[in-house]
Length: 177
Image 1 (spheres, rainbow, N blue to C red):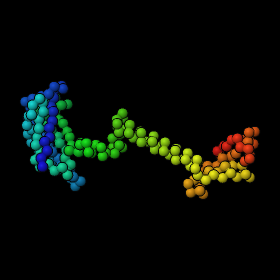
Image 2 (cartoon, one colour; image 1 turned 90 degrees about the vertical axis):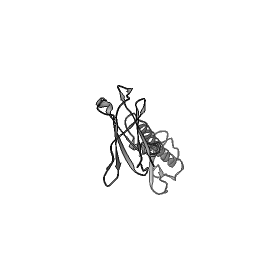
Image 3 (cartoon, rainbow, N blue to C red; image 1 turned 45 degrees about the horizontal axis):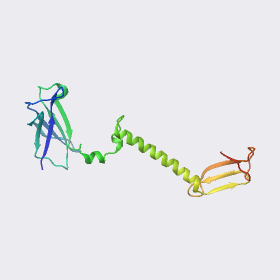
């Protein structure tokens, strides 16, 4: 299988024609990276575009590409880099924590995830207050709300009447202990 690799070379933002760019391709593997294409010439397509047909391309491998537009170009526009893993599949499969640059989409998604998780945690506690086992202790004038297991204590409240006196018969207020 082959893969066409293209580059656009410019000078001060204007497409540059008549160059003799080259390409280097590294195969990236865990045991050590290998230079598989060394300074191969690229073919001019037109309008500043140049291409190289990578005949030995294997989509199961990871590659790094570096193109060199040549000494005619300013240093800031001479080199370009890419990877075969810059495709949509990898982008959509990436963890948002891998893309958390300030003011980026990844940062926004992470912030949303954090806020949603915090809201879900609060909702979980509120549901426990609404639906879990509760018990009024008439001697201690307290209300105990239990965890989901019905045994572990989630929260204990002191119960007060309208005068602020502990009372479990005529309750006007509950104060967390």
